[in-house]
Amino acid sequence: MIEKDKNKSDEINYFILIAVLSGLVLILFTSSIFLGTTSISIKKSLSAVSALEGLYLTIILELRLPRAILALFMGAALGISGAALQGLLRNPLAEPGLIGVSGASALGSVIVFYTGLSVSYSFALPVGGMTGAALSILLLYFLAGKDPSILKLILAGVAINTLTGALTVLALNLSPNPYAAYEVFFWLLGSLENTSVNHVFLAAPCICVGLIILATTGRGLDALTLGEDVARSLGVGLRNLQARIILGTALCVGASVSVAGVVGFVGLIVPHLLRPAVGHSPGRLLIVSGLGGATLTLAADISVRFIATGQGLQLGVLTALLGAPFFILLVFKLREDD
Image 1: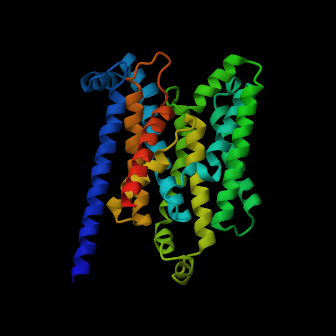
Image 2: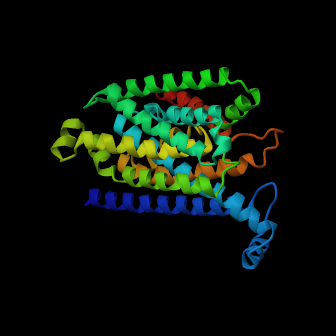
Image 3: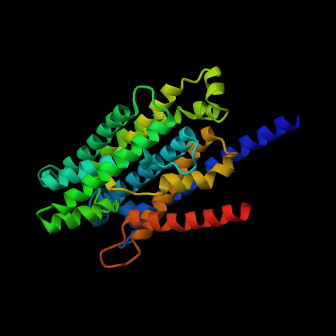
């Protein structure tokens, strides 16, 4: 009876958490549309939309709305990818870049910058990033083998990250145009500033497919906490679970990096913060981390608009600045537990 009441209480708390995070996402998404260097009141925005013309309508539809949509999708993608990988690898320090997708996607986009295709074709940059992400998965399975263990996947991912990182630095080092290298450098820091509706149409479908795939892995991740042998006895196909998580992560992270550069720490911090709130259940953590990732990314993207630093603070830099204190606090917490 006590156990039944506890389970019911956990269910209620879980849905309350989802409702709270959903409310925060809605508030921040709306704020992202109306807040910026040029603040737009709701009255002005409604007048512009009803008239279907004017500067405010242009700002909302062509600048603010695509940016807000991508921040929401990208944050959700990074959050749920981090939670899924941490559950699969059973390592709370795992993050989406661990399997090499982020580095490969960034390299693909850098190659597009380097060859000048980004100037000739507006779709070249995100397409290059997603191509790099797809090739990284093929290379991951080539290196790790047909039926890879967790250790082999991690080692293969580290190898891909090292290789793609070195090639990215090499491309910047050999760039004949210093201004192009400077542009690539700032793009790699991660930003949603120059995104448009075209980026939404390219990235959102891939991210949606990735989110759906990752959302289906909850039962398998919960079973995996009991051990691989128990998970198999419960009918969980570990190879299939592994493949779905890697494919979903590649779609989510590859599409995100291809349009906004590398925005780190979201997929690492958010699952860490929310895990205790869901009773350390990997399955429940997925949806919650998606909402938490969207909340953090939207909040960070709104914040960078108001931090005047001349060149402008990049989104990826701000998330990294948030991530460093998080790890310091985590170290102190572990010291206290010892």
